[in-house]
Image (cartoon, rainbow, N blue to C red; front, top):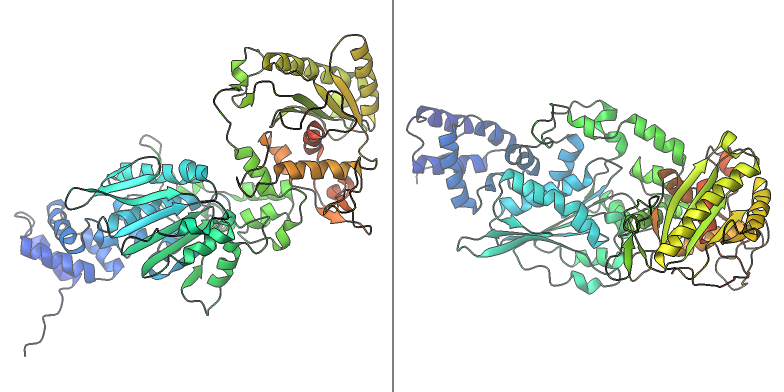
Length: 591
């Protein structure tokens, strides 16, 4: 019996192709070359491809499509090769390690820091999986904590990638379809979200020989949904879980899966962290030119788009080395114990991202015809307008004013130094904001008077007195409420899980309750349209308890001792929300 003919080496295949460049490779020879390339190791295959003429490649890829069912079947085992060779985009070492783990592992878990391209990675993997497999043989399912993350973050990457590379088929908002060999449009990828408690929503997805599940923003995925993915990972199925480590959910599904990936007894799962400190802009790794920017942009290194040490140092200064934000987004690690913050940073981020309602009864501030109101967010007509004022006790720190219109919190003013050195200056500035708030209330048709809550400590005491006098003299028509944050809380329920010790603690817990996501909707009850510093300060204080079992919010003195700023902006927000008793013309907190 004759020995089988050994496969032609890529070098020999290249020589044959070179001899026949003028006439093109015969169909039979193209089939042999395609077969050789499919058998060759990835690095040799990719180098050999560069030696063929355009005419040769055309015929070779025709044969590859015949053998694999896809024009891009040659890259089925090399996602990084597909990104570089087919998409024409640049990739760096950590990204390469992540994408090339997918064909070799059942589960690939990626705790990621800030700005390292996690959604970019997920989008390119969707393009790879959908293109290298014949339509109808691979289904790619993408999900995230919220549908807006699927729609507004991941799928724009997917749509741009498919269109720019000229991949087959077409995309709508969260769906990619490719015609099969009979011309029928086959869905190869789609995006969805599921309710946190609805594990059944992950059932019935598997309907193709192969499946890839891409979980973006995996740090926020509920346990029931995450656990539901395990039932789908049968046969040729794989999972990518990628996102920032959860900062406020001890033992989250993502954290447990990342620990599993570090366990050598779980070979089916691999964990590949990608910290901000891994950025080539920090490590000095030599990376190729960026190929993702539009034509006309001068050539530049890919590292320009990645975080540098300036960002890292600034973030550590703003939050503190031990803050959950730094642990998660700089080091790509999971904060232990949920971080111990009064208000977890993820709740603040969610409130910043909460979408503006539209439809009957809602109006943009910029459309009210008031010269000073230029904001684009919407508010409900008739909403209650309130102000919160934190006055620097001794002229130091910051004097801040925040406004609450229905469920929206807005930054209005902050200043420090000479601008706050006497009560007259402070009171006049508050009066300006009162007049603006009264104009807004009239334009919205609000039936409640504007309510102004002011910290009476230090200069605030004098400012409260002046504003009350001006109200008596008709200079404004708002209710002035002085608040002493050092007093005992208004209410104390011995059976409550969290019992505030002082009024300041009560204010922080009230804001915490409003920002805490609802289990059904996944969102809190507020929309934050505030400055970056205020958002940081809201998640700065630690949560503690005293010997009597009361909740005690970390004091300004202790925060300053560990290098943090006084949370004057955050406390301006708390005052805008806080409603001390007795209430005159009491209204519900959210209009």
